[in-house]
Image (cartoon, rainbow, N blue to C red; front, side, top):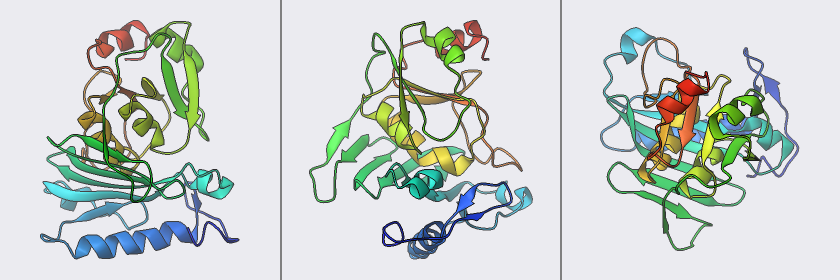
Length: 249
């Protein structure tokens, strides 16, 4: 937040995505903190050098971190960026922490213990849950990336739906606290973009599915890119069938 409040430089990484001093400072703080925990587990992070698949393939438990998700929102100073820390166990996110530093909103979840929301630092914890599909549905969408496709959402949800733009992993959290219904991501994302918020959404009663309707999983291979996915709040609906009918599967 000290960097956010000042003038800062923006670099471009090899993939043309932006990088600031805040990304790197958050990386250092989080890596140092996780290294103090027992047991010390491997760490995969957006701002760290990635180990080859030959080493990662044997991991059962490891940390998966995005120290600043939504760097474009950080640069715009619209507050819609997050810090994401997930614990992966056998390919599934079993612990998730999502912090929005500007608002101080904090979402946490652990497998079997539900999802919780603290609206600001020091506030009471509130257990959160998803809702049944609203009529009309609300679709969370990216603030800075295209690719969701209103035509695809129309095929999935019908003509009557409302689009709610929001940055970073906060879209998942919007579903988790029952304020939206779906988030369809057609463009590329990386595993650290989704894992922590997926745990929050799943513990709140929702799901994150690939476009074949299978749960999104982690440490799948050499690439750390996710397949395209659909995050949903209401798991009582046959989303796999809807995806097929919409021509998205």
